[in-house]
Image (cartoon, rainbow, N blue to C red):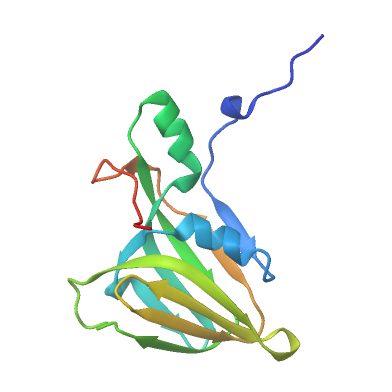
Length: 159
């Protein structure tokens, strides 16, 4: 009798996920929780109707394996690209300050008429970025190999 493969034996690959409807957004949001980025790593391309963000993402999907094996927590550089964007607004962010590092807490989806809507990137410290779109289309893609989290710790959130 053959033995079924176990999850632990699977090959680890970079994330490359898309979201096309409201049910997909919480998955992307959970993977992006506690991602950090400088304000200078945001790019709004009005002609292409694309907003993209390069960030250092905590690898939540690897946390349990790291703890079980006693190895360091990891982060990776990832790109979040949002297509069909009609407008971008922000609050609580000084994009000219190259030294400010922002921390992403969650993505919040607001449906609109006929597939349109808005996506809010909720940031620590009362900052936010709101993207108005014609149709929901997100892509989260890891672009580097994982590296040891500089703090050596998993992010924590007070209750």
